[in-house]
Image (tube, rainbow, N blue to C red; front, side, top):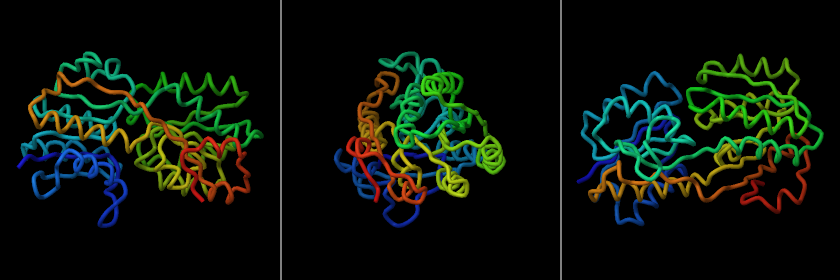
Length: 299
């Protein structure tokens, strides 16, 4: 029976049937796989701690799984260091060639393939959405973890340029893991920022929401999971669609295709999610024009 290894930077989903798993399981079912019947899945979650990734990656390699699925840059790099032979399907990054994990999108060339998740140019788009939701904002803080964002300089360059076009003052705050969040938010308060743009904070979204709530900050994230956790809005690639497409890569590898020959795909579906609960808590009225464009409105 084939075995899939899964390595994620986030905490393990809670509950017997967590929604985070739905797309993965659905994708496998559509391809004829049923966990426990004709396929096994070995899951490892680092709980946002980079120091745990190397050991978890090594464990999956020792188990001789047939393919490893990773979410985010840190798990991808941990597995790349652990094996050059086991195929890796990743959902991460924005430019695989520049980031060094593929020779080209059409023919990755190594043991890593998958789908990209982020676009540096989406930072300005999220700022535009925040400005549309609250035209009075003038000061914004950008929170970024270079461990999660390999092309952080390019992302920040695009974001700061977008902020200048909108007349926003920007303060960039760098963190290195969840341990730095409290100190970063103390600096956010000092800047007098009215809004926050957290970049690649998905694994720490619940903690970020708790800290934002105390300062009554508007926020724009990358994933609907962040909006569901309490961000004001989120705009980015449809993560459910990416996960389902990743299972197609896994299926092809299990049937004999080499990762080196499987083209890396870019997102084709994007989602705008607005959280009206958060807006109400902030005393904010979201324009109807923005709500009408949203793919999901949380009430």
